[in-house]
Length: 56
Image 1 (cartoon, rainbow, N blue to C red):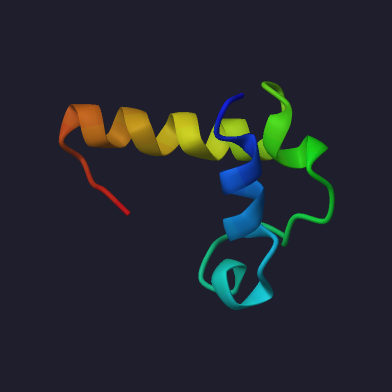
Image 2: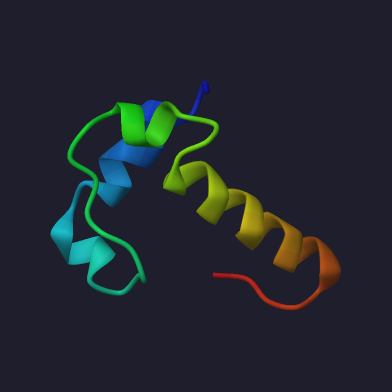
């Protein structure tokens, strides 16, 4: 939750999200929700990194 504003600042930029497989964020709540897509994306990528499968 402490990084929600930073996450939103990155993923609200269409120039960034054009390289991702999800829509550009339009509300800060999209970055703050622990059940929202941002959280799922971050968790999925963190797990891939921990397994040594990849990093973005």
